[in-house]
Amino acid sequence: MERKPLHSVKPPTPSSSHSPEDNAGGSVKLVHAVGMHARPAVKLTKLAKRFRARIAIRVVGVTEWIDAKSVAKVMAMRAPCDSTIEFAATGADAGAAIGALTALVANDFLDIEG
Amino acid sequence: MTGNVGIVIVSHSIDVAKGAADMVRQMVGGEVRVAFCGGNSEGGLGTEVARILEAIDSIWSPDGVAIMVDLGGAETNSEMAVEMLPVERRGLVVVCNAPIVEGAVMAATEAAGGASLERVCAAAEELSAG
Image 1 (cartoon, one colour):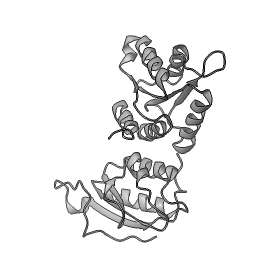
Image 2 (image 1 turned 30 degrees about the vertical axis):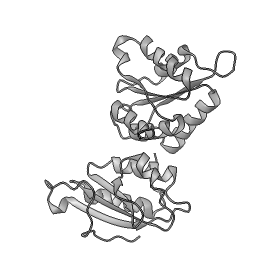
Image 3 (image 1 turned 180 degrees about the vertical axis):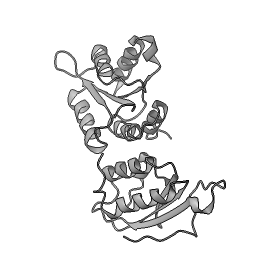
Image 4 (image 1 turned 120 degrees about the vertical axis):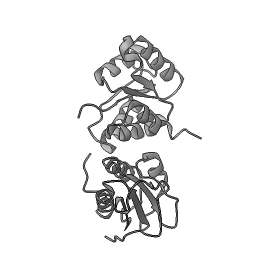
């Protein structure tokens, strides 16, 4: 799993009311064989909704930032296998959200049950 | 889990309705209550208000119920079913303007997180928004 802090990019809805430590980011390679199709998108969105932080997601170099809690938008990303998924979160539990979401993608979406 | 918006799937075909409900259960999980109905009493295609009312009753949630429909009569009969509900329940049931299978999965995904009825319908209807 590849993770690195994000300093050069911002999600589309950064909140100026949060201190810097309320922001977190991470990127991870999508290893799912057929990319981000329906079931992975549902799992990712459900997990994102467990956190209060605002969470943005994009396919690096392919898509704009979108709301990671919108299943329709995440599904429509059509992220292909081997692409790099990047997350950016803002809010009190941003760090935990990034950790959980990057782990989900890195573990091929297997570690979460409905 | 209680406290989540429930989903009712109304298709002219019982097979389509059951298939859509299966997709919700397998893709989203069991924490969202899903009911389905379809077909007429002769075993053919159609929708019946009484069956829609039964489906709503079977998964009733005080947080609300979102109905997914396919074509014409499914929508009008679902609206009729909503009008026949006890008055205190009427405002808690919404017929969503969304494709039946995709809408059901999107709505259930939103509902699984404990979202309000309004947000559940918005998630389903995001698909048909311009």
